Every structure is written in C-alpha cells, then in structure tokens.
Length: 121
Figure 1 (cartoon, rainbow, N blue to C red):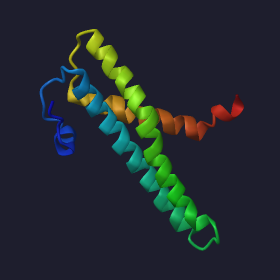
Figure 2: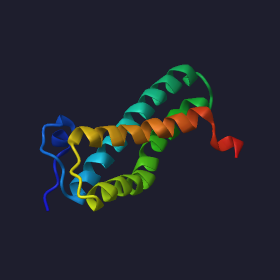
Figure 3: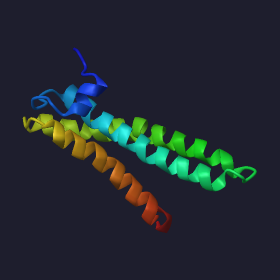
Figure 4: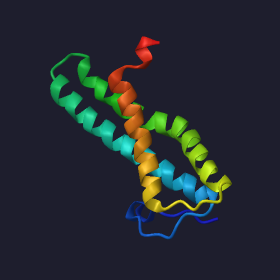
C-alpha cells in the first residue's frame, strides 16, 4: 500500500479516491494542515500582542500545540468516519471534496471555539 505524498494531496490533481485509506489520508491531511495554518496565525498574533508580558509570551506555544494535538486525535476519528461513509456507499471521493471535508473540520472547530457553545452547557 503506497500512500500519496503531501505534495500530491495538496495538488488536487488526482483521479477520484476509491479506497478507504486514500480517502481517510486526504481528509486527514487537509484537516491537519488547515488547523496548523489557523493556529500558527493565531500564535503569531498572540506573540506580537503578548511579547512584553511576563508569562503571556509563552501562550503561543500552547496555541501551536493545540493546533496539532486535536487534529491528530479527533481528526483521525472524524476523517475515518467520513471515509467510511463514502466507502460504504461505494461513492468515490473527489480530491476537492477531501479538501472541503478537511478544511470544514477546522472551520467547525474554530466556530465552536469562537462562539463558546460548549461553555453554555
């Protein structure tokens, strides 16, 4: 079983994804790297605004860690569920749909974080 390289996944120039592992891998990589991108931007902003604070200047490190850990843990499961539904229905996934599913996971996670829905429970 040969996995595609990251550059191949990001090029979006492939045929439809037919196997569970390819679907899962593509969705997972898009979710991981979009989360890393969003959290890196947030960490840069936090560092620039908190650089003179005694302890606040270390918060961007935590932001970066949170940009990697949740996609690795929950992203693996949610990407597998998406790939399972496509595979169980024998529906091939276009690489562009993998992008939408992966980035959609990051957008959903960010919207829940910004609206603080969980704090009201």
